Length: 187
Image (cartoon, rainbow, N blue to C red):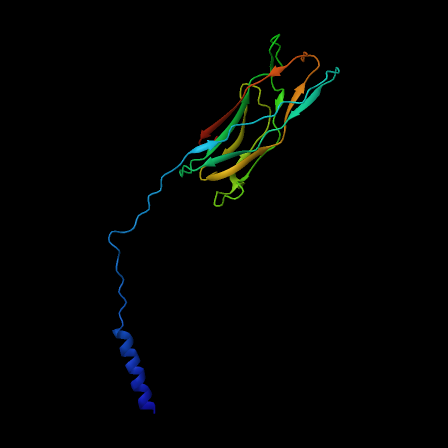
């Protein structure tokens, strides 16, 4: 019996040596060309500010801001930043101007767009707020290198217009708010 087992074992070892695995390379090797898309953000939509009845005190009035979509489909990983800047509020009839820094942003937030998966995490993207009707404006979002790739929803709380009794005249004031989306992060 032992002799028979040795023969079977030797036969199995010999059979396994005869089995040869051969790998063949595919020629030509498969390729996948990936073309980058664009960097874009939806237009900013701001509601009108609530009407204010002057009463001799400093007053504030809010205006809602619609959430918007920001997409970086370039596939470069160079990052980006978004800034907001507004002109000073000016009264059309008399040309009266509200002081610099009268318009403040609410907190800004960014999340991966609902229903869209695979964007880079938002943990590396910084958000800022502040007044925007001045010479500098505010960089509200900053995505460093290798961050901000994908599609996101950008939201912000209401903007607030501050009216000082010493500088606010009755009338209708207007301002132009500009969004700038720039390739590359700020340092």
